[in-house]
Image (cartoon, rainbow, N blue to C red; front, side, top):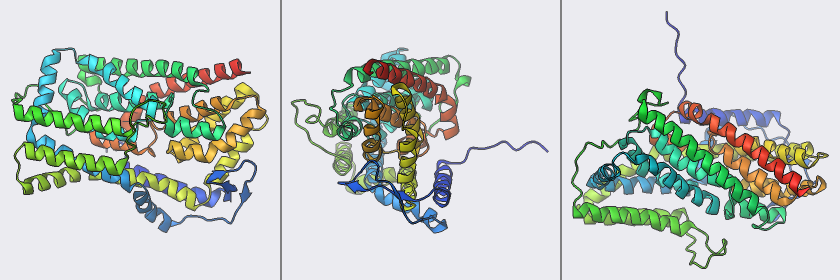
Length: 463
């Protein structure tokens, strides 16, 4: 009898297993809590509290509680699906992709650095991350039609934006919040983070371009197989790019441009541009209006627009569920009162170290913390008020603590199954988590070593 080949569980199973593992940990890890002032934990105030172990019922309910917490982003994903369903039915995307591939005439490789720089700038300036979910269904077909695989399409967005988030320069959601708690300004440590961004974005572009070139030359080297993904568009399909389809593409591109502009906090970045301050509710409305407008341009009947939009929502229902389930992990940790205990362990581990040892240890401690608390703003709020004061005793400035925190959080969110964006992107591209891990682990290792080097240099120069 032949050996049974191991098959990687689905994203849903992986997330439920993680929820169960965290629930088990609440029976083993002592419960504890800090004293909070205005929602911020106070250093040195940790005390044990009554144990609150989470059982089978908590595991079963965690996914639903997480879905309630993430309902805004889940509805956004569904609305994007409805918008794309209407647009795809018009044939405009197929016609546009075909025209782009024919126009490039073998120069498709230049799309990789250009688009990765775009997403990288979004990541480093305003933390472009959850918003990238709308771009995967748009760009995966382009790279599939160009002869690459779905991993290349995912990488351009995920690693492009991710390298930017790791080395956030003026990102108000990670750098800004953490800097405030660390008692420093966004300008403190900016030069180091700008150099870090250049190096990391360059490394990501090189990594993705090298893989894409190998897949283009020899499709058998793909980790998933060329053409993997349900959104494939063949470059050989001759779909006419009529004036009506051109108008639809203008609306299509305009929706994404408006979305990008609307979420950038120009006022917090010191730029003299009107700040709209939109988030998922407003963005969902934008894609709803965009879908209706596209349907009207294509002369669809009212019932056909509604039916197509709902069908498009259904296509991304699985992605929305994955995002909701992933939030359940944090729910179980908080309900089990172990989050503060884990932070306290970090506080104890950091005591009595020198500048280089301190900042490297901070970075290494933040790696597992980022798995358990994938929200960068949430992790900053919980931990930086504790870690930054300890840095002063070790001769490390708050700006370097901020860099260590955001570098660890950004790195982990490229690969952890608790990151909703990672699991959602893989679901959209029909790429298995094991395939993604096998592809990206070397780049993660490069980033890990480079970050430690940057932090050590910063600690030496600051000492």
